[in-house]
Image 1 (spheres, helix red, strand yellow):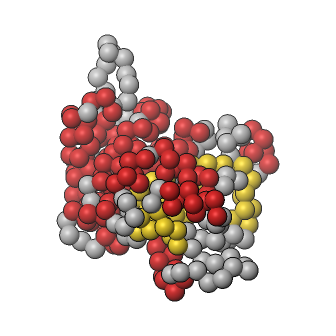
Image 2 (cartoon, one colour):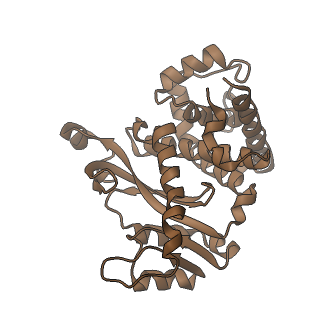
Image 3 (cartoon, one colour):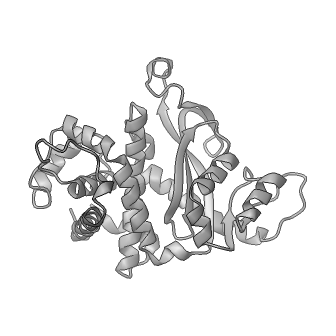
Length: 304
C-alpha cells in the first residue's frame, strides 16, 4: 500500500469518527446490551472504502489481504460472514459519510452538474435471472454505449464537472432517466435550494417540454444536444467536451472500481457494494481537494 492511500484511509477514518461522535444516531443500530464490536464503525467504513479502492471484489480475498498487509491500520479484522453482515447494516452510514465528504469540498458549490445513468449488470444466465433474489428489482435493459442488452440495474448519477458525486440512485434497468432525476431532486429539496440557477448537462434522453419545465421550476437550466428534427439548442458547442466528464466518471466506476463485478446477490448486497464504490470516488476527490491536489487525478493518485 502506498503512503498516499495510507494517508487517505487515516483522513477518512478521522472524518467518520468525528461524524459519529457528533451524531451517534447515524451509527448502525445494535442491541443496547451485548458485546461491543472490536472493529469500530469508523474502521468499518474505512475498510469498505479501501476494498473498493484497491479493487477487491471478493470479500474473503480482501480480508486475507488486509490481514497480511493492513494490520497497522486495523488491529482486528472480522471473518467474512461478520464483515458482510455489518457492511450491509452500515449502508445508510456509508451514504451519510459520502454526503458529508462531498459537502466538505470546494466543488460542492459548482454551478454546473452532469447527469447520466450506467448499467449495473447482475447476471447473465437464464438460471441466474430465474433464481436471483434481485428478481423484481433487476430488469432487462439496453446499453446503447456497448450496443447490448443486460439484466440488472442502473446507477443514476448527478456529479460536478470535477467528477464529485452529488446525488445518485439505483433503479431497475428500464426506469425512465427523466423521472428518476426528478425524483432524486424532489426527495432532496435542499440540493436545489442551495444551488439556485444551476445548469444541468444531460444527453438526448433527458428531453420533453414538461420535463424541462419541471427543472425550470427548480431554477435548473437544462443543456442537452438536439434530438432528430429539433433546431439547434443553445450551448451545443460546449456539450461534447463537458459530456466527457460523466463518461470519465462512469469509466472510473467500471474500469478502476469494478462496478460490474460487484458480486452482490441480494438487494442490500448490491446496494452497499455500489455505495462502497461511490464512497471510494468521493473520498479520493475530497482528499485531493482538501490537500490542494488536482481533483481530476481522483483514484489515479492512489496506485497500489
